[in-house]
Image (cartoon, rainbow, N blue to C red):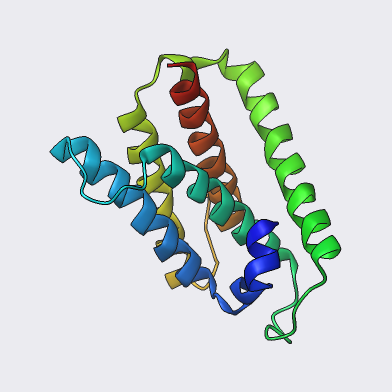
Length: 161
């Protein structure tokens, strides 16, 4: 919401592939830092995971909004409500899956979360190339939900460390 105050809803012009590419940049940066073992830009991995959560939720909000009038600024209260609605949905999915998987994520590495996020992004790119059509797989929205949840799991583990 602070960035909405600063920038308005400039993110409305982002097409799905642009959001995917922004997420890809964030995840690839984390992977590079993990692989190289050092970084030259001060932004830390925690900030990148937070950005992945934010952009993932923006993707879900954007999917629910009409594609016309992308240049009109949405009121901050509406943005907040839409964002919170998607965050609540993602949390519900996380809690249901967490129940079924028995918190298996707690034994996963940070590297695995990044690899899974990158895998989901490549899947979304293919879904977009297929004009959103899938034969037997979940759509792009389900992949964005998983991406947000993987990033949240990574943030929880980073915080606990």
